Image (cartoon, rainbow, N blue to C red; front, side, top):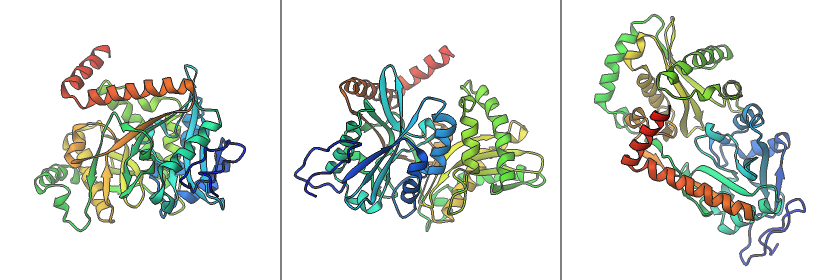
Length: 396
């Protein structure tokens, strides 16, 4: 094939190019069930994706949240000339103010967004390949703009090919801990910090049945989530923060994903808990892929045991748990909370792309890009950030 790609009649023809693309066809699917076999094949650990793009996680999000919010699946799958899948872009289509926006499934519940790639194709994907993919999506004439937010520049040491598209830094950073398994535990968490936590933990160790563990049974998962959805709203009210877990479908999504069993073992979301016989003391829940753990949500007890820093103790246990299993990284989600910097000394570079697909999309992409640049400026300027926090507090 001498053209950049031959896009089938459902997606239109791609422009010719002097450079040959391996992408020969692109399908756009609006049905999760039709996409599932290819999706699960590309989420295999031998391929290239993040755990936030697992089918079990995003299908639960689409079912419980996306559909309620008016998002419909818009899944782009690229193939080579022999009809082998090269990548799957898990998008949804929504409309607001007359603009049809294609964005990643998962919304604010996914820290990182990526396509699911054939690893060999990802290693050599070119700008022409990306142009062919975008041209196929544009040819469908169903979306005005691609709004592709919170994408990592690299994952597991491999560059993200989507960075070949025009992009800009995301508004927020993601604190990151790099782990070298061969190094001693004090290389990850200092000896002095460990001693401080050990001193606090002695108070908790006196409690009957004190333990730190990963929930594995359905009964334990349900019990811990029942506690979380009781305590978390009270914690957020204390901080004068809106209870995002009260939004329609969010609790159902979390419960479905925590219960979903992965083919290789484990759950789509793992729950780490610190508890005793009398109460749950703290939980941290997140996703992992055998290389990295990414925290999604957490909270800790309202009882007097909260004064012993149970969240930090549990975080220490989580770091040691994954380091002992050969993991190479750990992150605590996007945001600048002080406790994250106690563990994470680096930042994950993440980027956004706003790609116009129509004349209306040009205006929308420019507006989205401008808003995100303004947010980035505020978040990275201490004086502006402090002013924004004061204004937010005044409005509350």
